[in-house]
Structures are given as C-alpha cells and as structure tokens.
Image 1: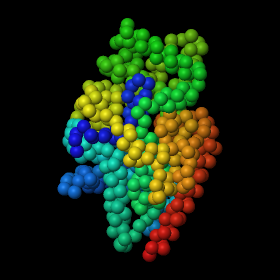
Image 2: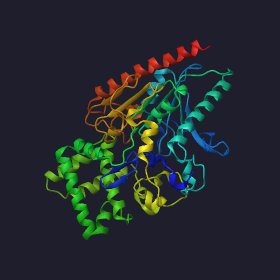
Image 3: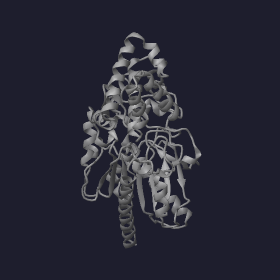
Length: 456
C-alpha cells in the first residue's frame, strides 16, 4: 500500500469545523481513573492479527480487553460486545449497558481499539507504522476477537461449536463501528446499537456549527460570538497574556489556541451540559462583566479542571511526537495532518461513504441496527436519523440530550453511573427510547436463539 493512501482512523470519517479541521468526534473525553466508574478494570490480553488483508504477513500484537461476568446466565446467556473507540480503554464503563446486561443475563466484553492505550502494534507511531490504523482493520479485529472469545468460552464450558447470541454496542465512532460490524459481519451478531453513530463522512461539516448555535440559544450564541471577536483582537495586541488567561500559554501556534478554546465550548454542548458554559456567560453579559474572564474561568475550571483535558492535545509540537504512551491517541487530529503527517495525507470521504453507505447504510443482510441520537448533539447530522425497515432511528429530545445520552445519561461529563437519565431535562424522553431499545433487543436475541435451535 502506498504510504500516502493510508487512511487514519480520524481521516476515514472526517469533518471540518469553524475554519479549523476538526477531528472525528470532536473531543473524546477520557476521565481520570475512578474505580466506581467501571464494572471492571482487570486487563486481559489477546494476540491480534496486525494485517487482516495480507495473506503473507502473519505478525501479531497484544490487544487488551476486559470481561464482566457478574450477570452472565451460564451457559446460554447473550454476550454484549462493547466497542472501545478512539481513546485509551481503561475498563468497561458502568453505564446503561450494565443495566441491560443484568436484564438479559449477559456477559460483557470490551476490546481496546488498535493503536490506543496499551494496544499498539509498534514501539513508535511514525506515519509508516500507522498504515494499519483504519476502520476496516478495526472491524476485522472485532470479528477475530469475537470468534476467539466464543471458542474460549466453549472450551471453558466443555462444549463444541456452540454459539451464544451476541449483541454489539458502540457510541460515537465506536457507534459507527457497531453499525458497520452488523453490515460487514451479520452472521457474527444478532444486532447492534449504534449510539450517536457518525456513519456519514462529511468534509465541510457546517451542520455542526448550526446545531451549536441552535443548542446555545440567542443569548449564549451572541456571547460566544463576541468572545471570538475579543480573542482574535487580543491575539493581535496581547498574544501571550490572552493565552495565559486561558491556561494555554504553551500553545505557541495561534491556530492551535483557537482550536482549543473553540473545542472547550462545543464539548459542553456535545456531552449534554450546555448550561455549564452558557449560564456564566449570559450572566456576565447581563451584568456588564468581562466576557473573556468569564469564559476563561469556564475553560480552566471545567474543561481543563473537571474534565482533565490537556492543552498538549492541541499542540502541534506534541502531536508530532511518535513516541508511544497511554495518551498517544492525541496524535490523530485531522486539522494537523499536513503539518504532522506530511503532504498527501487527506480524507477520502467519498470512498468511505461508498464503502459503508453513509446514512444510506443498507443491504439484504444489513438489518437489526438501532440508531439513537440526542437532539442537541452536533454530531447527529452525520448519523442516520431516519428510520427504515428493521433499522429504527430514535432521537431523544431534551435541553441536555447530547452524545450517547441513551447509554450515558445527562450530562455525560463526568459520566453518570449506570447512565442515569434523571438528570436529563426530559428523562421520560430518554426512558422511552431505552424501552424501545429493550424491545428490539429482546426480539432480535430471541430470533437469534430460535435460529440456533433450528440449525441443530
């Protein structure tokens, strides 16, 4: 494969936001380790194939995964495959999937995505070494892992050639993988939940901006627009001081800094917490207080503080590092492809949509996929929002229904234990969608079991 044809995970599904290239999924918030946020953090390992498309390359790498068996109904209970996406996978999150696992008597397994966390095939992340990072390879990883785990379970239970019913879950990019897994490997899963799944690759993603404006409302939108103008003015006259005000003095590149402060705002909307940014800004505006100071306080207290986001993830100097670390996933930003990876690395959105189908995902075997989206999530416009036969799509409508609300609750930063929906402004809207998810899962898992019995 020509090295310039490499499509990185964030390049395969690519977007453009507010004049800055915006990596897929905006910001994937990785919270600091907190044991009560996880069902398990016990690491298990599996030897994964490096290149699933080569008949001659037999190299393997260690892929980390987790399993949670507390609710598993031995021996025929379903197995829930929870896809970890574009971040370090520290365990199986204690979200709404755990509620579903208890209801259906399911085991929960979750493999870490290749190249993230501890599941890196190489000791450095040079562009040449990144050629095996793609959604196609990741889907094959899931298929091979699924087969490995099923065979291992059969061996433990001393039974040959038995298939438990499998169901796949994912949020965001992982939500897209969940849908695509059902599309490409329909025989390996009874169905998929594609939560906030960005299945459509879009280069000039103006709908993101429009949704942020709608979710913000006129007063907050006006304040954010005013802040943008004030920041740009300060960058011309007092660059070091304004960067220091936001706790980002180390961001030497102005574009990196602007990306950072834009991301800090939209993350609150994306993860179902619009008031945390809008309320102080609107109050400051009405009281005639300094808007820049009000916004800087939000960025430092919430974005850098509560969420623990590092300014390094916006710094081109940091992103050019090829060293492996737990946070090496920071390197994959579309904005910086030319500067970080070199000339010729670019998103091929047309090929991606032709291969996967975009929002027109379809096929004789492509069915039994549930699509869910939050009404205020700016990424929902890249998801499938229109229901089709056997592929229902639901939108949860409320003031703080954001990214992955059906599984994570409101707000999602920090994550709510068991995906608590009571903090949503309209919890009934979320519960209604969850009930529909349960009904579809119950039907599809039953059909899977019936098909298995009939084949015996």
